[in-house]
Image (cartoon, rainbow, N blue to C red; front, side):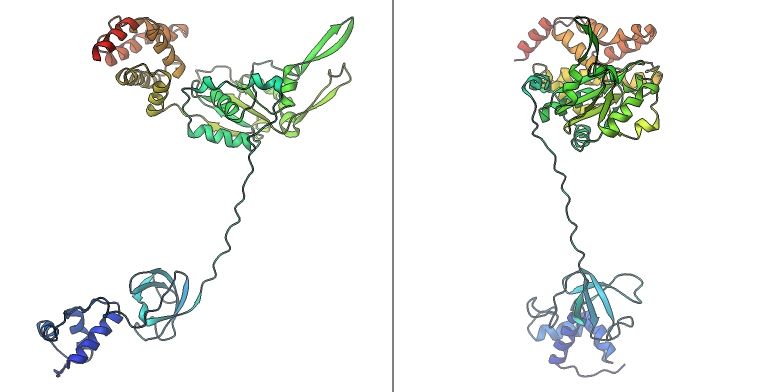
Length: 442
């Protein structure tokens, strides 16, 4: 390399070119550029020269910048205007995929991966066609229904849901019903299946009808039956006909208790939204059509040792439905529900009851005890305790004695030990004791 006298103006030009290439204008990069020209200066000399010129090495932010910096957008097609890199010979074309301060990230032919380059070495020659925006399809969901006055007393009352905790599964059920699907709510007892249908009815202002299934249940019998009037056989229509011919919510509970042979009428009802009843119209037969705003759903517990006798439905019935598995209540949901239902209780007492309930559920699962408990049993315990029973009796009568009902008396002791672990002293704690304690806390 040769050593040459470098003028101040040439040093400034080199500094500017370093900036144009997207590099930091420091003594190292300026020295590196000078070497490419065959000029050798040490970095201390470079710093001294700029100091002697009365300006910092990096220059002012507003004056040292890439010349004629073009403005790019993601998706622009650019062309190289220099031979800066071997893969970007003059005329090379690529696409901008990201933008930085003075650099752009490009991709294109012969690039193994996206590469960052100074934007001053490229010009825009076009833009990637933008895809047409997707048309948003909105499903109109009806929330106002023309319910006849004689059915309005079937709409669930607001006070039933004063302590209701809405969960994600409730919204999923509501969507299925709004869209006219036939949901099967499945899950353990006490996971809120039936109440979720009732909550939907309340929110939509729809009458609610619940029908419990059993092995020999016949759907046609719900429509009515023959009777004798003045010596003549007449067909007496039932309330079920009013339900299906008006906006309503109909829940067939324990659907897996129904024999598969008796599901065929449901096939026609769900497929055609109508059913022919041969005994109707005094034996002449009649087709009953389902109202367009009549919502139909089902509920079932999973078939297991705890639910002996349940029938697994055939595919030609299940294929007409959607399926929603209801999860057990989480700890936070339990605490929120108790806070709403029992605002007079202290937080510590609510926390203890939730802790007890969760421990009982874990014990049942680990020991394979053939019984399920739900939040209903927990509420029973609390109601008995607040009603004046001592805590031990409330636990025994409200929950633990269920094990004797299913011939598992030995397992009852484990429930009591769990209670003793939560409440260190299971002394007779009546409501009077509780109120006295609360007064002392004040």
